[in-house]
Image (cartoon, rainbow, N blue to C red; front, side, top):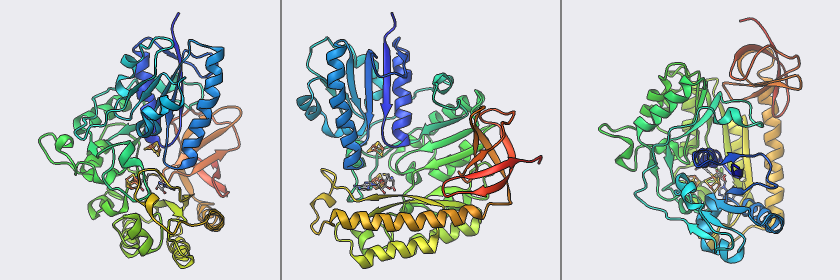
Length: 450
Ligand code: SAH
Ligand code: SF4
Ligand code: F3S
C-alpha cells in the first residue's frame, strides 16, 4: 500500500512554496498526499518563527501529535521550516516523538531522510551554507489541481531568492533562512515558462527581499549581470502570462529602475507591498531599516506618479523597544499621509538571537495592544474609504472560484471581488466587472460586457 503524508504550512508564501516542493519530492518517492492528519503515515509541520505566537502554535500542535502517535505508533512526524532551522536538536530533545527535523535549505532532499526506524532517535538535518545554490527543481504542473481545498492551478509562486542579509534588529529570518542567495535566472525563466505553458495565468515571484535580487552573488547572473528589474522584464515576456506580482520588498532597495517598471510592463500588476514597519526615524534607525520616513515617502510619491492606480499595502510593528507615544503618533501620521489600501500590523515580539531582544525599554503588553487597536481601527476606515473609490468603476477580475456556493475573483490591484450570481466561468478566466459595493476587506461586482 502507498504511504500517505499530510503537510501543514505556517507562515509566509515562501513556506507555502517550500511545502509544494516537499510534496512534489515525496510524490516522486511514492508517497501520496492526504488532507486528513489523522492516520497519515507521515505528518509534516512546515513552521514559522517570525513571532512568538507563530512558534507557540507549532509547539501546541506537536503536543497534540504526541497523543496521536500513541494511537498510530507507525506515524512519522517531521518538523520543517524556520522553527526547525532555529531550534534543531532542541526540538528532538524536548519532543522525542519527533522523527525528523529538516532545515530550510534541506527540504529538496526530504525523501532521502525519511528512512527512519520506529523508535530510533529523531534525525536533525539543518545545515545552512553561505554558498547555497537553490536547486533546479522543475515544478509539477498538476500539483495544485490535485488538492481539494485550492481553486485550481492558475496562480503559482516561483521562488527567486532565499535568505536575507539585512539583519533588521527584530527579525529572525537571516538566522532561519541564511545568507541571501539569488536563483539562476535561466532556472526561473524555465520554471515560469513550464507553468504558463500548462495554463498558469498569474505568477508571484517570491523572496524575503526581492528588490536586491542578483546583488549578493553571481549565481543569478550566469554570464550577464541581472538585477530585479531586468528579471521582471524577462519573466513578464513569457508568452501567455497575464499577471505578474512579487513579494516582499525592503523599501531601501526600491530604485527608480524598478519604479519605472510600473506603467511600462503591461502585465505587471499595479500593486506594491512595501513594508514600512514604523513612522519614526529613530525607531527605524534602531530597527536597522536603513531608510528614513522622508526617503520612503519620496518613493511612494514616485510610484504613484508613474502608476496612479497602484494599490499600496504595508507591514507595521507597534511597540518596538523604546517606542514612545510620540514615535507611535508618527506611525499614525504616516498612515494618514500614505493612506494604504491595506496593511498587516503586529505587536513587537522578542525573538531569540536578534539584536532587539537585548534592547532595554521594552514596551508593556497593554500599551502594545492599545496601539495596535488604534492603528487597525484607522486602517480599516481608510481601507473602506479606498475601496469605495472603486464603486462604479469597471475592473478586470481574474476568477478564483466559481461554484454554486461562491463566485469570486481578484482585480489586478489585488482586491477580492464577490459576485452574487453564478457565472459560467472557471478559475483563471478574466471577466469585466462593474464594482457595485465596497466593504472593508472586499468588493462586490457584476459582470459587464467589455
Ligand atoms: N522581508 C520583509 C518582511 C518579512 S517578515 C521586509 O523586509 O519587510 C513579515 C513581517 O513580520 C515584517 O514585515 C514585520 O512587520 C513582521 N515581523 C517580523 N519580525 C517581527 C517581530 N519580531 N515582531 C513583530 N513583528 C515582526
Ligand atoms: Fe527580516 Fe528585515 Fe530581512 Fe525583511 S529585510 S526578512 S524584516 S531582516
Ligand atoms: Fe515565517 Fe520563516 Fe516565512 S519565519 S514569515 S516562515 S521566512
